[in-house]
Image 1 (cartoon, rainbow, N blue to C red):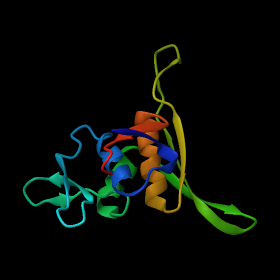
Image 2 (cartoon, rainbow, N blue to C red):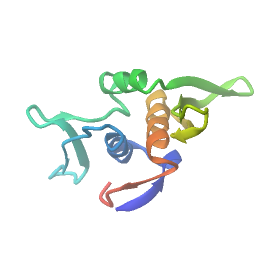
Image 3 (tube, rainbow, N blue to C red):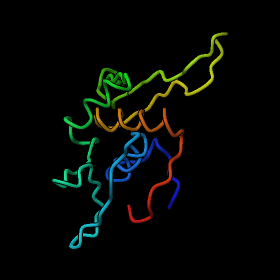
Image 4 (cartoon, helix red, strand yellow):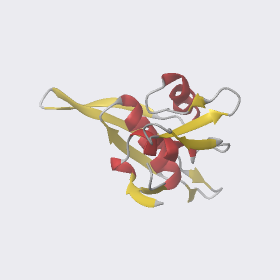
Length: 133
């Protein structure tokens, strides 16, 4: 395993990290015999690849469930990147924060920013991913 900054993680490594944020997670990760590329699956029965960084059908429910908001970032009137934000603080009866934190993440695409935000809100600023990814 290697430790990477959530702000820099992309592709299969980010999909892997997202799976770690979901209670049931993905059931397995395989490596393509021809290319050696890691492939996450979320359904043993039909080998449904888990790719929320590019698949809106998989990412959409996560965006809603975790209340992740995403907006474009402009610099000098030109689109620069996407910014995703989630408020995951939980408070005790006295109003003291007891769990979670606000997370802000950026990415070149809407879904990469959103999935980085989810990972950061659940796992922190760094995450461990398999060396093969």
